[in-house]
Amino acid sequence: MSDQERDQNTQTETDTQGDSPVDAGQVTREQGGQFLQESEGVLPVSWEKDRGLIEQDAVENVDAHHVVMDRSAAQSVKAQRITMQNAGAKSIDARSIRMEQSGTVDLHAERAVLNESAIVMGSARELSLKESRAVMTVSGTTKIESESQIGMLVTGDVDATGDIRTFALVAGSVKAGGQVTTTLTATSAAALGAGFAVVLLVARRLFGGRGRG
Image 1 (tube, rainbow, N blue to C red):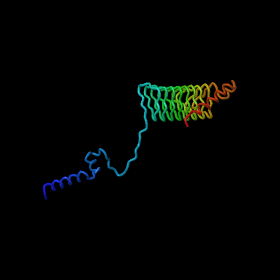
Image 2 (cartoon, rainbow, N blue to C red):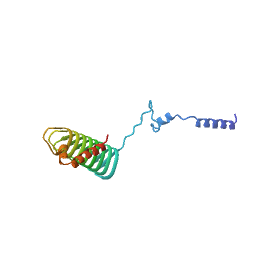
Image 3 (cartoon, rainbow, N blue to C red):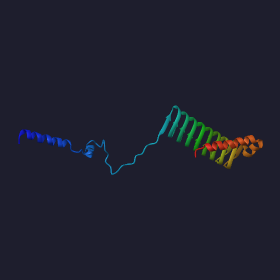
Image 4 (tube, rainbow, N blue to C red):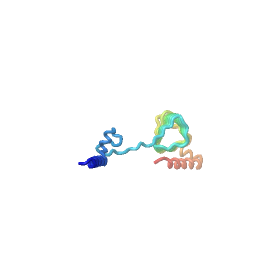
């Protein structure tokens, strides 16, 4: 075989080796699994839902799946679940909210738990207050603990471990471990004038309709 033929055969073998298929698994194993993770099957992909954490800050609008506010303030907060500690917000729209030493002007929730907190107007399917204050609330059920006070309470059922003290009370059923003190009921409001009774009726429809279902 001539030198020229040997050179041609050597070049052909080199080209053939260069065109051979690459073992992706082997490459991956050699590179520590950088590009391919070997498994028996495809694993389901899960995405972590948005979570908002506000700590020692003041913000405008918050919209997230789960919001945690600590020593902070906001104009409006909208979320599935909200936890507040020493915080405040002008308006809140949530499925579930827990307030600890916090406050809001306008609250709409499916379930609201207040501990040493205050609200001006609120509507909730389930409302629980402990050592808290509210000007006006509309709820399906209301639980009152530890000397909580509500100015105007419109609810289906109210259950208090102690006294109930309100300015106006409209309830389907009332259960209290102590005394029930209210200045106006639906009957006394109607006796004072149809105007005030209409106000109570409109308030119940307004706030009850705006609660989250």
